[in-house]
Image (cartoon, rainbow, N blue to C red; front, side, top):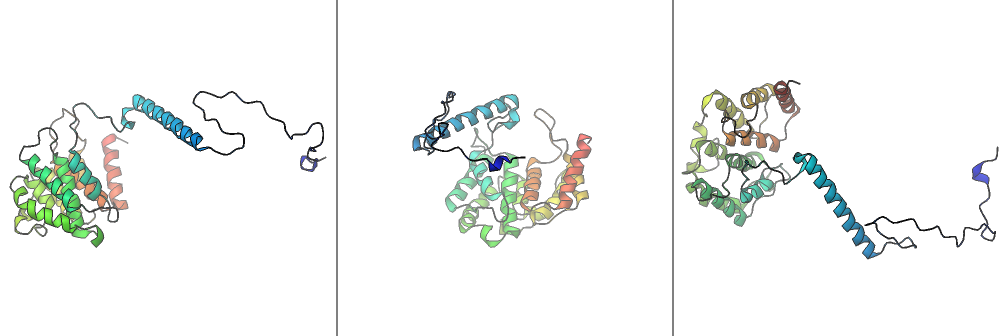
Length: 281
């Protein structure tokens, strides 16, 4: 059998030559990029391609958001208040891992703590700092101070800002937030005496506080401890539901603290078992 690979190529001098033969132009759909026949990309073509891809991508995202609002970054239930933008920016920098954390400069640290102070005194009516934000932010600061490597611990600017604002914050923040900010009284000096004595209110909160002390020190928990804590707070209340069994600040501090400490396999097992029990899986 003659192999197709051994057949001679068409000669350039034969009547059936491929040289000079031009294929008919295919119909071009609207919005498509016209590429030059020499096969090289022109700068205008790249710009047109980028614009078309951006337009197409936006259309896909809009359609996905319409079908499933959970996929949209801008979707929020109408009754859910927005987080405070200044503190949210700080959370994005300090509530992360030992190598990823970006310490705040003095100017930003001053602005964040001033925002928290004005919110706690009732001055910020339009965009107050939520209890969950307070819990997450101060948990991040505490874990950084207690157990992060030197490069991602508090900057000098953060130290100066905290030394200026904490004497005023300690008079207006709720006890659970003061506990999160200095659980053992070793960070804020004489103004950090609430933490060592704090035990929480009610059985569920007392159990959460005990686990949170370990987390804020950079420690890890067994899966049974995780299960016990989560069983007290699941299901998470929806809008209009009754008040949660524990402080939102404490719960937020616990969840973000676990993430910052990088959960162990045992801790992840505890989360999986707790949610399986709750969802009936």
